[in-house]
Image (tube, rainbow, N blue to C red; front, side):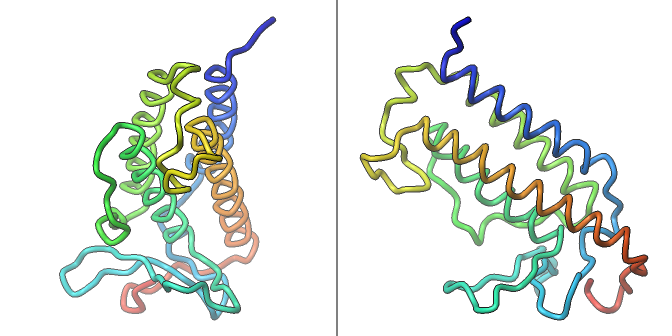
Length: 184
């Protein structure tokens, strides 16, 4: 049996997504802003009520532990930009990608991105996979669109594992619900 690269990338993506759905179906609103330690990155409303992610231009040392809310924003950011590039649109800046504001909306946002990415994967031909990738390597001739699609699958798998681990840690810790006044 012969499998095209497009079929293999789609299979890999669907496998990763099925693992993600396992966690998405079990997430509770309180999971998204639970802070597993004293040094965390999260999402919080700014002065205009837009939910923005903690960020540093240079990765800090030690690296803050992200909340599920932050990881879900991170997925939404890199995936939105990857879809923009794949569809020939001007990619949005990181600061334009805002978290939806609650767990249910975040899950729906991510499922919507899944649909957009599936449309991209359906459109690719094997020949298009050989073109130079516009993202995340900024047109480095060593990386193709196939590399970009493989990177999306790998990045998603990593982020799914992070969300799953955070969800399990919160459940095992018996953590209380965050208080509305703490911003968490």
